[in-house]
Image (cartoon, rainbow, N blue to C red; front, side, top):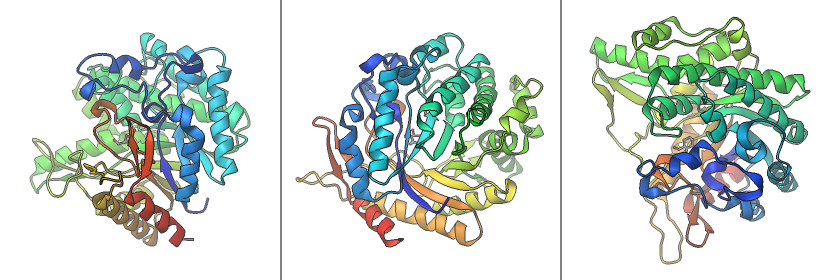
Length: 429
Ligand code: IFM
């Protein structure tokens, strides 16, 4: 794989058309309907109307000059209710998207699960329930049977930490549960589902590159206090090693298992599971947004911040990529998401001169280049996001896009960052 430049999105955040062509509700449709769950009562019902405007959006991608477009498949669109046969009309949309991309010389990169679990599977127990892992593998094979002849790279899961912790422990994402032991069971079943999907796809003859995408960042102690170091160790354990150790080394870290036990949580591991979880993969997707600084009392956020209140820490990106290369050698990496929300302020003509986002992207791309110069095996960089979209519990307020979306008219207007990124890509050829 040569170095790839790309942009990324996900189905629920951009597609809209939640009732179209046989799609059934996902946990996000349900979650959004509960007052107070999403800022402003926003939902993904309309989103960017990408489901209907797909060809126009692909034309815009081509103008950016990206090599790759990373998008996700809506499970309830292609396999309504999370089990049983494929919904031909739903899958046909992705078939057309793949062909449209290829016709414009853009490689499709599919993410199979970006958080929109079919509601019926949540009703049957969701990710804390082991059967969901098997359902996911079945769905992965259904989709790859149709698309793998044209899709060179596949991500099983996007950010399982967020799925488990935000969705089942903190309750700030769908399905909105607040049960830490259930969240820990979800972690294991997500990883198991990933491994079963990899095995299932390989068994059905898929030779494309397969991988998983994790949200990762370094956890730094705020000071010299041993309690700060202990907080950083715990955060690194729960955020980084709890995923990469089983995926790469086939075991959960002992200190993490002890931390979980102290909180009354147990990983529901059965014989043979870890061999499945550590099924060989070709690429690790790294979603990097910021480093966390940990004090005994919790996370500390200082210095320059994005519109989300996230610290701007490009150096941490270099360190993270080098660290993964050291601790988990032999695994090629791609930065599958990096970007920032800022309060975009369009001029009278609608153009957004987003200096802060442009500087953010430039600094992080430099950070990736430094990591490569120092020996990290990083094979691509994808900006999050192609266009403004539904930012989960924050609704449509935060704008991460390189392209502005005027939600009232669905007009797309490339921002300065998009034009800069286009030139940056062209300059690297
Ligand atoms: O919008 C999300 C995306 O869905 C997953 N990674 C982080 C992004 C910004 O919060």
